[in-house]
Image (tube, rainbow, N blue to C red; front, top):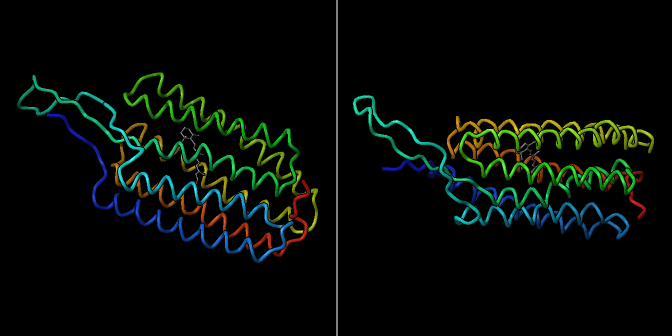
Length: 251
Ligand code: RET
């Protein structure tokens, strides 16, 4: 008899709650776009897209789409029946990676524009970010504990370090040069982003990676991070930017 590790009541309810929160954020951010002059709307447009993509992916996961079962191990069944073993399958929520491959580049774009990075640096940061998410997807699909799986995970972490370099080192320098309040605001919202983003590979290692976390706990952990990294981040960015002349983007 196989064992299935899947979402329960708590996980399912959490997915619906986040879906609703992301829809509310979508309505709020697009309404806010109308309250600022058109020259100031770029951040609103990008940030609204982020919560639209998140709404779509949470709708998919809450209704059972974008999820597949992966064979994760063969486990010895009972100590008094030494010769029996059973297969263990676990849900992999691949809809997340579709979401992240679109939303993390957009989140980075928000921060790069705020810091005033040039096109070449924005492009490099986004390419590293896409490599991070797609190699993370490969890692998630290698569900058994194989060297390949942890190899992909390592590659994703290296790509993440490249993203951090662009943002934290180069981004901060550029933001400070922009003058006004941009430098200190970038340090605050960039630091917030750095802490949240770094939690993702940690959760991944405990949940998808070594499976020391139930599927429900995994859903709740990512839910909290997603709401903070998209909706709270977005609200903070848009409200601050509306009152900050130096953050305007001249394309
Ligand atoms: C993975 C696993 C492989 C190693 C690394 C990862 C990083 C993921 C990150 C995700 C950020 C997601 C956000 C979502 C939107 O709200 C793919 C988990 C480094 C940083 C911000």
